[in-house]
Amino acid sequence: MTRILIDGGEALYGEVDISGAKNAVLPILASCLLADEPMIISNVPHLHDVTTTMELLGQMGVYLTLDDRMRIQVNPSLIDSYIAPYELVKTMRASILVLGPLIARFGQARVSLPGGCQIGSRPVEQHIHGLRALGAQVSVENGYIKAQAKRLKGTRVSMDMVTVTGTENILMAAVLAEGTTIIENAAREPEVVDLANCLMAMGADIEGIGTSTLTVHGVERLHGTEYKVLPDRIETGTFLVGTAMTGGKVRTRGTRVDIMDAVLGKLEGAGAHISTGDNWIELDMRGKRPRAVNITTAPYPAFPTDMQAQFTALNCIAEGVAVITEKVFENRFMHTHELQRLGADIRLEGNTAIIKGVEHMSGAQIMATDLRASACLVLAGLVAQGETTIDRVYHIDRGYENIEEKLGMLGARIRRLPA
Ligand code: EPU
Image 1 (tube, rainbow, N blue to C red):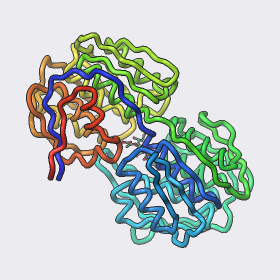
Image 2 (cartoon, rainbow, N blue to C red):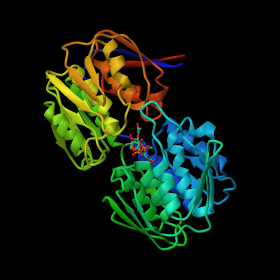
Image 3 (cartoon, rainbow, N blue to C red):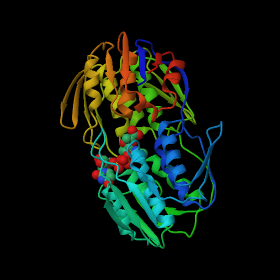
């Protein structure tokens, strides 16, 4: 199993290019199932989850080719299977995103139930509830969600909680439904907006994009288009936090400034100097130690749960005491136990972590438990004195493109050790 070795203590300096957003490209690739013509998706990040999605679509009969500019051509005209098998869904929960498109376009779908994961139980009853409201017959048999429908019928779907992939699934189902669907309490995450914009480019008719009420006027068909995936705000935030922790100065290029407010606000609270341009964000820490910042996660536009672990790492070496409250997932603090092995002072109380910043952490052997936990441990390794070895780093390849190359270019002493 590959490991990452970090020799801590180097501040990050320089410029880094931000990749396309994982959580946008996955639903956008799934949305290709809705088109009756080829699609071209560009700014695709080179990630394990993208490969898994390509494998999943490939098994359904979708023809996919990837060119050297990271553009995927997707030809959905020969689809002959409507199944997302357990073997793939268990490695990537986002496979559930094929459910909405399959039922909308082909009237049938058999998608494995994802089950729990490292960060919480993560049920999908809202996806099922929404599809049933649209007229699909949905049952759960032998671990699979089995859905059937002639043509879905527009209706009012009110989500009990804000769910990102739940909103995306219902949105993708509604675009080909007969009549108008109103999705209430919809997620407003920029990745949901990106999916909606892609669907519009394919000929969908959606009002209220970026708000919590989406009004979808169903259309007969969706055509092919070329669509560029938005930049990854979580990758951007991860590099900025690493820069703040190490006291360095880094410019993230090819990113989006307007979707980063909550994270940039907290970085300024930690003492960082932030400057921005059209598509770049620069963080200058001027060699200073960060100040502790309190964080409470919640759906967009509030502070994202996918940045919680990284800010937990920052607070471990910050000046002062921070309180971190995780409100989206019930078990997203696995990384705190590993951070304690590096010398962090963290106390867990339910969904809250109380962190007393220490002046130094020291390198140790630690283990990644999920994607964002991996990123947090890498950041901690950058500041821990001596060597840190992180096991199970395959998690990081699911969502960060060439992380060790990018950090290495910024001056980090980091390398991957062979299995
Ligand atoms: N929930 C339910 N029932 C449902 C759906 C959701 O109880 O039917 C609960 C979840 O258990 C959770 C909360 O609602 O407590 C929010 O979950 P959500 O459905 O929004 O999460 P998701 O759609 O499964 C996406 C991202 C996650 C990100 C969350 C929250 C993708 C592919 N994944 O997951 O990304 O953390 O939204 O923003 O978009 C990551 O990138 O590391 C990651 C985990």
